[in-house]
Image 1 (cartoon, rainbow over the protein chains, first blue to last red):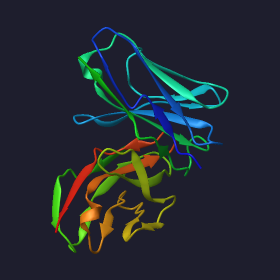
Image 2: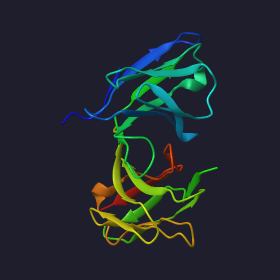
Image 3: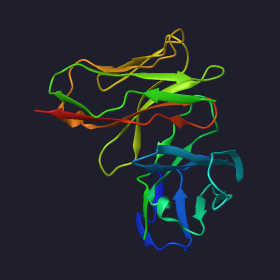
Length: 114
Length: 109
C-alpha cells in the first residue's frame, strides 16, 4: 500500500512569490491535514480537510490556504511568500477526522524562501 | 485549549541506558494520546498510542501509560539503542492533532 506522497520534495522561492504544494493520501483515507515544521516553532497545525471540506484551521494568516479534491488529494497554497515561511511542510492522512485515528505522514516538502 | 507540553532536549544517553521523556497535556474531554518519532530526513511515524485512561501503549520496547489523574503520558524505554536516536513528539487528538515541541534523543555507543 503506497504511503502519503508529497510533491515537490524541495523547492526554492523568492519573497513575494506564491507556492503550491501537493499531497496524495493513502488510498481510502479521506482526511488530510497539513503542518508547518520549523526549528523555532516546532510542528504547527495549518488545516484539516475531510471530504473536500475544511474541518479545522490553525492560527495562520489568510496567505495560507488549501483545498481537497474529490479523490482526496489535497493542495496547499502560500501566497506572497515571506522569509519566515521557510519550513518543512508536512501532509498527513487518516481514515476520518478526530477520535483515536492515527495520522500517517508524508516525508514533507521543504520550502526555502530567499 | 488543547495543548501538550513535553520535556525539552536534547537528551543524550549511552547505549542500554533507561529513557524517560516527560509529556503532560491540557485538554477538555478525553483525548487520545500519541507518541510519534521522526528520524533524520523523514516524516513522522507513529510509535504508540493510548485512547483512554490507564491504557498502556507499547511498541519496539517503548511504553507510555495514559494517566488522567496527572494528565501525563510519559515515554519510557528500558534499554535504548543507537538506532533510537531521533526526535520524539507527544501529541493529543480530540479533533485535529496537536504536537509538543519535540525532544531530540541521541544515543551514543
